[in-house]
View 1 (tube, each protein chain N blue to C red):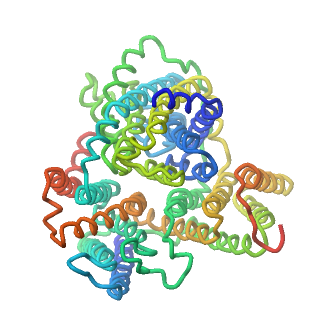
View 2: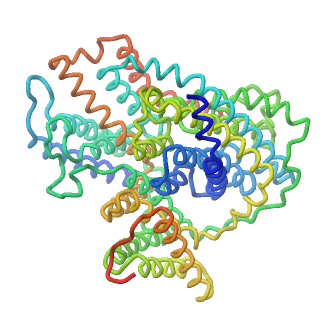
View 3: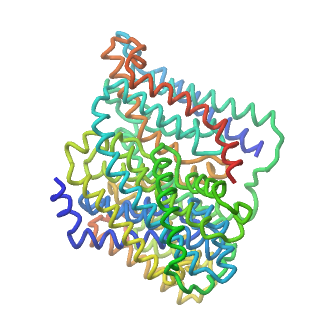
Length: 490
Length: 148
């Protein structure tokens, strides 16, 4: 199986796709306003014609590259390229202002690399064990798992838990459109043939994450971008390596563990890491003035999330964050169903993905140290050309899925909805996760009741389901503590 | 944000009630096993309760950050939304190539300050690259519209 996985990954075309993915990811991450999720959503349609290995490794390349790429804009412009690098901007820009932009970029690249590699190790160690454990799950456990995923995502991903719940519920309700899989009844189709097979979540995703972000780009069209400053001595000095390696291990591990929790993305991980680094530092008062360890910690943590988010996605079919949700879509387009059976039925692809993660991180490190000046030039791409191109890619990408103009209309509709959701401070991630987890929750809910002849106590009849029940309660109570905790950390 | 939250709560309360109404028309439960309408009703109830909570919270809290949706920056977004709807129709009825060129030329003209030649060149180049990648490399057929 492992030999087959190596054979799959070391095909020249696959390696080329990983390099292309990382390079385009860094470019996307660099550009303020283009998020990691948007980048992966825009690249997804290009993968429809590819096989599973090429497709998923290209997306992983984009993911790893974009999370790192955000730090380039954060350091050079004081504007995080992605929300995940907001914590990096606090000290990164200060270092760049002192004429140490190259050093700051070198520290960010190296810490991201170590954090990413650590997360890959955890991914390989934890995933098979968790997948084996998940084989014990039956309908009630899967239902409780889906509810847990939805609750934690709704409660963590936005400013308000209630808005998160509404957003998640919207996603679940969208998933109910179409023919009911158990009784064959039509639900909310209103005799429209396009709705008989339900709403595909890929156009919804492109609309919510890419199109709505492009509308934000239109809104901010008049804002001027400061041109990047000179970058020299990117390769870290010998004296910096000790701190980079230490931070990489500690905060990479922290990022991976945070990434495993559904809904907690790289942005939260990087702020928690920043806060922890500050509290463990001998000079906490110097944080915010341009400290190297204040760059290393959040960067190691946000790249640590990349591997962590894949753990629940691959083993349980529950996405760790919005990017992992898009990857679930990519796997499903290839006819692969994420979850414990993926390891049994498609072992070589899973192991190829593990190896590909390592290679993507190595590519990111090499490209980051050697070509950062080139990537910094991406910052000067004018929005007046970039935004219309994103519009076009959203249209073509959503059409390419089923060659259906209806999907394009769905994408545009959700692009508009996503824009207004952002304006009212509602996170779009729960909508997508509701769309993915909704069918899993509903089918297992009804199957469990069918098996237990309508006895609702089946949902708390085993140790696993009771554990999930407790976790659901904790996840709903979590927002009460979250704000206080994050405030204290920063 | 008070006004925004009230509108948000109103829209989603109405949506939840609308879904509940239609879900109630679906077949009922049999032998204790929920019918196809049970799950949407359950989720709509969650949505309704959450929307009412957002509404009540909006009423009882101070309006600290007002929701601005009518500034010139926002109007630019609404015009862009409208133009994209026109582009969708244009793409469907006229054809991908021409509609896309016009859309790109229009937006680049609106957003930037370039010479007409540069705008036309950029619009043509982007259209040609995207068309070539999707049609020739990814084999996505763009078969719609009366023209190209």
